View 1 (cartoon, rainbow, N blue to C red):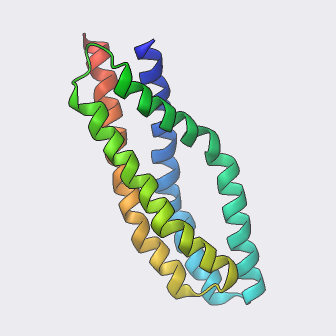
View 2: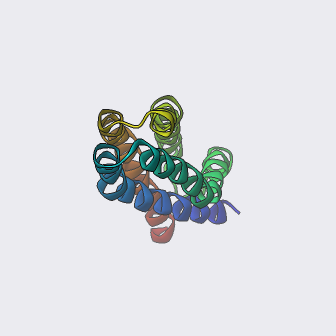
Amino acid sequence: MAEVILLANFIATAIMVGVIWFVQWVHYPLLVTIAADNSVDVAIQVAKQHQRRTGQVLALPMAIEGFSTLGLLIIRPDAVSFVLPWFGAVLLAVALGSTVLLSVPLHAKLATNPTADIARRLVVTNWLRTVAWTTRGAICTTMVLQVVRS
């Protein structure tokens, strides 16, 4: 059972790593352009659609990642180093905490009063999530390799 939880965690985290890099490198910089170069109505609609569609795409992987991260703290595969699931959990807390405390409020501002400055702040503050999820990806890969090599 612990290996299934680990695999679910690895897959969900890998999805989140891919999405966060796409958002950081492609999508958020485009929000800056949209906020700067278009009418307020267009920018508001883009911001609202971003929130709605992103939530639809990420709800399941984020839920699986959260539950499987908790699962690994309770049921860790024998081959996995004790500290790795805990380090992964801290990084998930950083990623989710910065989502709630930084990204969500900035998205709310974009959806009501879109400016290029707000969108730029979103790009800059998103680096915290990008680094946290990327590091989680490395940790999850390490845990999987520990199991495979055992």
